[in-house]
Length: 203
Length: 203
Image (cartoon, rainbow over all chains, first blue to last red; front, side, top):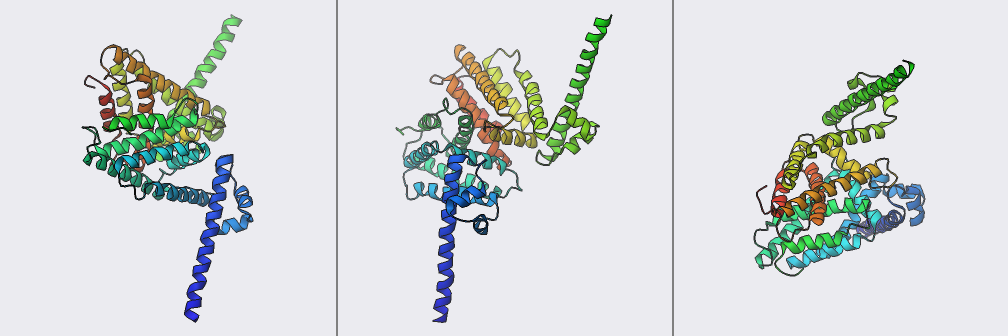
């Protein structure tokens, strides 16, 4: 009995801690989405999550840790779109849908774009995370393009890994241009036309 | 005589001030190139320029102003490559040469990439400057592609302004990937192959 109680205890605590972390991350994402990440303060996030600032710091020791937590949490959700999608062209469509959805939360895009560049410095706390994120993205798109190629849906001459790297670069670069001029840059249309140019079938 | 002296005086001072500013910018670029812009301090730049820190602050009131000065100064030099280049394909070649040269100073690329994203915020001191820089770049490449089109050197179906925006996005995005993984991303090769895909003639 003692053992059972012991093992239940930590698990219960773990689940509660995880739930509280998720609540904080949700609150942070709301504050960032409305105020922008430059203005989003730990105080605002704590208030939105119904916690004291000390309570928040128990879960995320500083602002950088919280921002990194938000990016990771959102990626985990975003990646679910791609789970179980076996068809290469369907993966590309899911990617376009994701960019379309991101366009509705410019402040979150600004957060990603800024941290992605800042974290190129090997000393940045999110460096390894973003390195892994790029590797995942290139790998996912490469596999999708290879599947399309096997199915005869890729134009001749397109090299999956090069095209994947370039698609990712194009997405990052268009985001920056879009942040400067939201009215005249249509990220989804640009990416769709680029992707269509790689395919032998309708996207 | 008095008038002549008066008009000589300020002009002499102006020329000296400009010369001193250029010396400081050159010193700053050297410090950034070797130490990286995160570590480049006003103290190091002043020492390299043979000035006191107060002397440096007389010309650039703070670190942001100095970094902005470095970016503008370097752009002015870089743009000289494109002056008087009348042939569209030659402009594209000059652009590739520039990217190739930039690859030799990764710390300066890191500076550009970081400030370009940070300055998407309308409150950033370099916001208007980067907005103008993007407009200039899109315009220059659009004109080059139009010239190539008129000369029958562009592939059918390529739209100059869209292709210009995408080329710029690709350059920005590849820079980020390159900063994460310099050994496996070849920016020049990627851009060359992309540009070659737009042209009906050899690049």
